[in-house]
Image (cartoon, rainbow, N blue to C red):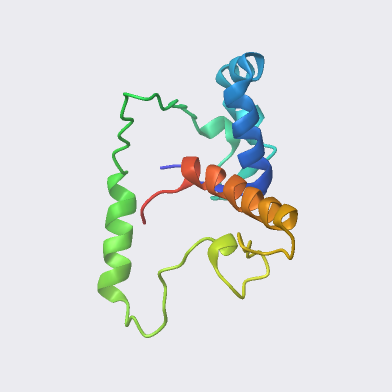
Length: 138
């Protein structure tokens, strides 16, 4: 399975929100998702090129369930890592923006004023939107 690394989570979240509300931008995304995503993500495997991968967008709807079945290779890799791990160090990580102490942490409660807190909450939400489409259970 080809994997993507988010390079601009906040930007991707903002883009997704804008794209979902803008018919022309949605049409552009559907026509060439690689070009649209490339401004916010990169391929995780340095040996792969954009030409090697296919992106198949699924748009959630109120009464639809888009069920993505994991790639068996990813499941086996994770099971092997668990089997051979000493579990001495915590390896189960959360995204940087969710990890207090990480330089990329986004505190959704930060700010002295209501306006500042709303700005922090919105920034955190944009990161979560980008995470929504990129997260895989691993």
